[in-house]
Length: 540
Image 1 (spheres, rainbow, N blue to C red):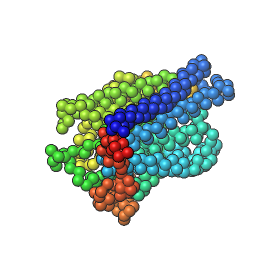
Image 2: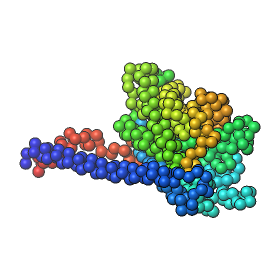
Image 3: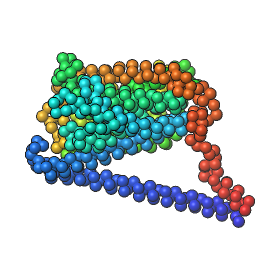
């Protein structure tokens, strides 16, 4: 048998296998896209069928109302599935930016957080966040007398639908669970490489089960003191406007980003990490081990954001709102990525280079920033606030580096700083054209106007109060929690033992018993495969 012939046959087999995989992948992707297009087509047609009447719900027959609620529920579930799909993007992004020796740990933490979050959000989180209670915490449904509250823990005693949305509580739960999971996943990004897995279990319980839903209740709960600000509650006399956060720049991203900052500060940097202010030549963030995976993860996150932001309307009837939110989301991402790329090209150690990592985090920063104001701004406003987000990313990464905080993926800058900027930007860029969305469509009777559109400082003031309150509360509470966990004995201590971080295979082998690439690089390369095949053939 000739070695050359064997090598040729082996190459052909590899190429054939690649074509088959591409064909299968293309088929699956095409099927998913067709399904989504059919759903979107239904959402475009049905509102036209029902949209000839007034917006008042009582003008619809029971059958028409049931159909509208069904379409809205399908829309919400499709959005929930897209948001949940962001978990694939998160694990790829974080793993790509991590070093090889800490990749398995990143993957395992994200997967574990997803499983834990589902159980905790079912048991207590949903009741804490979306139940009635008081301005600081919810726990259940409000009775007919307007005073008695029945607890919703373990999703017991819940009504058929959530509030006036017409959407079943369980559908609303799965949508909000995907949001909660996003917040918990953000935190692990800044704590890569030195967090023990058992320590991750403890802080994840605290964030997912208590910090996120309870503080989230302040802004999104039916009686949260920030949501009712301006009309009743704790801040009634301070602001004439309520705090607004359409899809979670503060509730999801700022909470996640600030919690990750607290965790990174308590942990300290990875061993051997050299900061640029200490050594200009050798210092700086270690490069990610696989930027291909990180880039693909970034695009998956971008795709999932089309469930995150448009899905937060909870209404397929609001055609104009959905379209505007989707367009604004796209434009802000594009502007953020472009601005971060230019900032890296013009300034700093990357000057003269088109930096991939900054560009990825730039469009993610634009997505985070637009998440709060996406319903109330114009496309031009979305571009402008996205541009600012791109520069915030660039400045934020070097600010975090200057403070000697080790943030391997830029979670603090992307989610924390851009979340704060996006929340405040509503007070500047709200165009004064759009009000609220509801089950049967938009209600523009009370449009939101920012400073640049003649609205004065009222909206900006409310946004500043809400953002500052949540940011400070999350940082203090999370820092204390992380500090306490880090004082526990091994193996429950937050930071892994030194030999677990520096030993052979790093934290991956120490905590999980395996490397992400157990096969040597030369054995998985094509040349290595050809040589191995030729050797086998010659021996035969």
